[in-house]
Length: 190
Image (cartoon, rainbow, N blue to C red; front, top):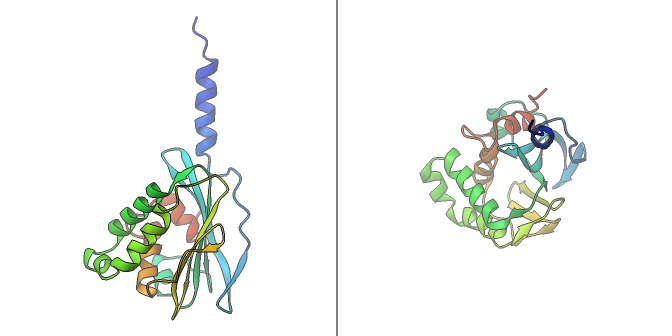
C-alpha cells in the first residue's frame, strides 16, 4: 500500500496557503497624508494561483464601495503593500505595466508614458523585495504620485490624478490583478 501521508501534507499546505482568513498585515486604520486624515477603505491579499504575493491596503478620505466612487473621489489616496514572498523587482514592474495596459485605454497609457516608465523603473531597479518589505504609492493633488520602498521616497512625484486612477485600476479596473482583492479593497468582502 502506498503511503498517502506526504500527499496529504502537500494538499494541506496548498489549502492553507490559499485560505483568505490567514493572518493579515497590521495596517493602521487611519493614515495622514497632505494634512488630510485618510481611512482604511479595505485591505486584502494578492494571490497568484494559490500563493500569496503581497498584502495591500487602500486609504481614502472617506469610505467608498464602488470603482466609480473611488475614481471620482477627490483628494489624497494611498496604496500600502507588504511583500509576502520574494518579489523580483523586474517581475513587479512588468506586472504593474500589464495591469495598467489591461485596464486603461492605449491612448491614455501613451499620454502618461513618462509617469508609467517611472513606475516601472522604480520597481525594476530594485533587484528584489523580500517577505516583510514594504512599498507604497501616494497621490497628493497638485503634487502627483510618490512611490516608496521601505518608507523611502523613490525620486520626485510624477503624474496627475488621471495617472493615479490608472494605477488604481491595476487592482480595481475591469481586468483587476485579483478579483477577490478588488472586493476587499472596496470593502465588499465577507
